[in-house]
Image 1: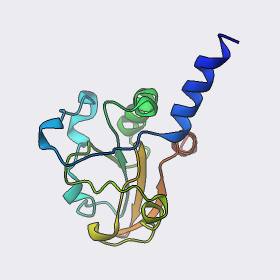
Image 2 (image 1 turned 135 degrees about the vertical axis):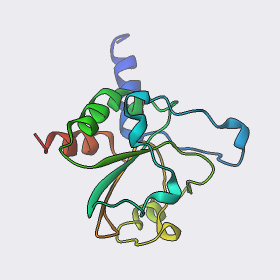
Image 3 (image 1 turned 90 degrees about the horizontal axis):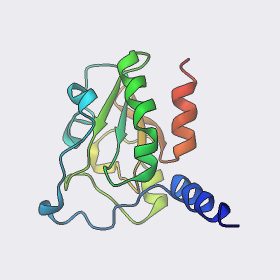
Length: 149
């Protein structure tokens, strides 16, 4: 029984992601720690300003357990060049909402005004300047990365 409880907690944390409750304080800003892909970091305002026709944006947090669990895989995937992947460390510019349906409605968006985040990690696919895939599920992100092998 003692072994099951930690497993349940890890599983729930992985499935649920990390919801950012308050993004109103600039003093809570922490520098991104994915230094191995520093050149691939972009700011939220540049989400739709990349030169590639198709690319991904990975929104993560340093305090997010699923993000930490994905770190090695997602950074290796980015460095592999199998797809164009950029990293966004959320600051006060990223619009976090407490409404999953509103965040999911980001699919099809063609401007920042219509893209919202519910939690980290979030992976957004953009094709021809439109959001064509939006996932915040740890296992879906892992599956997407694996699909490029």
